[in-house]
Length: 179
Image 1 (cartoon, one colour):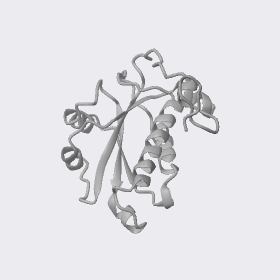
Image 2 (image 1 turned 90 degrees about the vertical axis):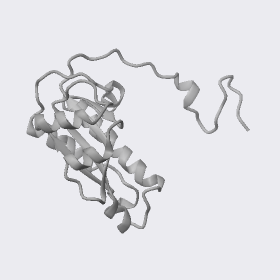
Image 3 (image 1 turned 135 degrees about the horizontal axis):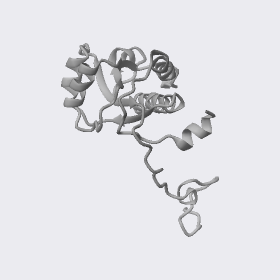
């Protein structure tokens, strides 16, 4: 799959069939995650892949945002030791942008590997940290549910490009330049 095709056809998949991703698919997704851009090359992350059915069920039990039953998940964590070494604090925007770039790489790599995925931010932080045996300086930030789609939903609508993408200057919907 070409990059443009992956970007234009990827969508959040929340319901999965029972087939499980294989080791090579998970490795490819993790490789895409670790190759994500990061401000100052701080790489302020840790990634934990989960495929054990009991652990996935326990994660789901504390994650109200997780719909369906994924057969895999990747937890994106903020590694506070990494941001300390680069002189940044957790409130700095580049740290969060770096984690967002990793999320996008994971979602696109899952799609490229024939899998569906969905980013989940609604979960009980302390419970997930406990289930994954995370040290105090590693914090779960997002869970990406992964599996083979049970069905492909209709592509969601997007605002027209002319309302949000401009050349050289911002323009209002009437076409008049702002400022």
